[in-house]
Image 1 (cartoon, rainbow, N blue to C red):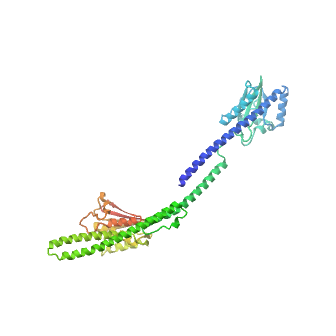
Image 2: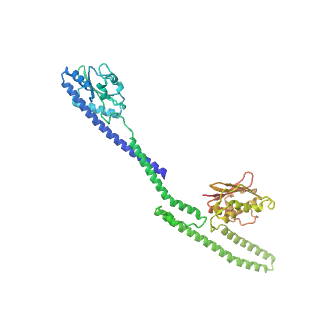
Image 3: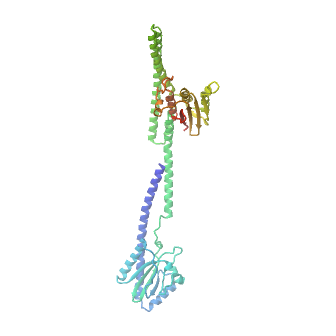
Amino acid sequence: MLLLTLLVVLLAQSLASAIWLSQLRATQLEGLVTAARSLAHSMSASVSYFRSLPLAYRPLVLDQLRSMGGTRFVVSLNDKPLDMRVLPPTPRKTAVLEAVDEVLHGQLGDQVNISVQFVSPDDLRIFNSGLSLSELPRSWAHYALTLEPVNPPVLVTQIRLAEGEWLYIASLLPEPYTSLEEEGLPSQQVWFIVLTSSFLLLFIGLLVHWQSRPLKRLARAARDMSLGATQVDEAKLEGGGSEVEDVGRAFNAMRERISRYLTERSQLFSAISHDLRTPITRLRLRVELLEDEALEAKFGRDLDELELLVKGALQCVKDTDIHENIEKVDLNQVLDCLVEPFLAPGGNGRVTLEGAAHFSYSGKPLALKRCMGNLIDNALKYGQRAHLFVEDDGDAFVLHVDDEGPGVPQQRLEQVFEPHFRLAGQQQGYGLGLGIARNIAHSHGGEVSLQNLREGGLRVTLYLPRT
């Protein structure tokens, strides 16, 4: 959400800045053209003034202007137009040149020969002799045509007054249009964008954090619900909005329904066990009274099968029951208790254990012991030996149980977790061990997976996350 917000803020600020900058440039261009027209009117007035002077007085007036210094224009009379290197055109230069040319022709007439161009101060030439700006006395032109350290371009206008007489006028555009360059975003505007974006992202980040805290509590309660009857305190969801509070109430209602269903299921199977045990026992007594031994054996097998099914169903319910409190479990102690009977010499070293858990685990002690015990029993039953390898870190506890059996066909790696499914029909048991182990792992947020080893045997991996 923060990344998406950052992208939206940047796009919005970029669009707003682009619009603002385009409007600013349009306003500046309009002001620049107005200033250029005003400058052109002043030039036109100067031209009219010099036209009105007698020929003999024109040099005297020019000498007076040069001796005064600080005038707006640098004016001279030349016998021909001066040739200077012109600056490359830009949209702003072109707009100024067109505006000045339009005003001068409008004021002086279309038949007047007028040359308007922008020249760099370094390439500027003023008199017939082609003197540069640096060769002139500072009082003559420097105050009017230099603006250090900007060094702006000079607008040079040459107007033909008569045959062999050209009026030369050089000037700078007024502030703030001196440089004629299109500026980017001002530094103040850039800082404004940065500060507003930072404050907006900070506010949205705090808002997201504030809204996500009750959702994190709800997610934690949802993860723990499979481990115990944890009810969400609706007061903890306050501040997260009415929708989050509604989710919390719905979660509590769902938890209560699931808990009630599990209780009713346990009671149902207990009642079934109680109700079936009596008639089965009564039938066994009656079978023993039969005189036909063959018929007695048939009835006995049927009753054994019936009792096996009842016990298997009851064990499945009992071993997957979730009504055990969560505690800190020392997994090393649990493993030691499970493998101790099989260690040498009494157990002939049928079980080996490598590695150890570095931290205690929050879970159900009996359920975890039953889960790992089922995995070890399966390895001993089908693979003769069990080799346990423990991997533990801050993220998860992992137990690998390797056996020396024939393994499991690849297409049946998931089918062996189904209740009452057994690959070897002659083996004793209910076919529930792996299914119960996986159910207990799931209730702790973990997983049980199978993998055939290259050197032979089956590896059963128990993964229990700590988060």
